Image (cartoon, rainbow, N blue to C red):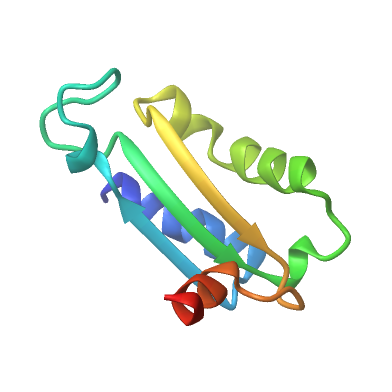
Amino acid sequence: MTIKQTITEKLTAAFQPSVLNVIDESDKHKGHGGWREGGETHFRVQIAASAFEGMNRVARHRAINDLLADELAAGVHALALEIRADSEPDPRAARIADA
């Protein structure tokens, strides 16, 4: 199982998201710190779930970082998080509409 698949499965099981995108951005970081041949070192996670209702930004990040602690310790160098509750608007939709 790839690291991307593991991240996807863990996030799905823990938060039952309505939106989940796990994007391997390792190719954008070739030659930078933490990068290694084969990728799976730099990820972006876009997630929306009702589980994040009432949680502030720091609590949301901690919840995901705690869940993915093993992956972070085993070679995931960077994890960019875009987290929202289901009731919150998608900020990416506003950027697309403004373009």
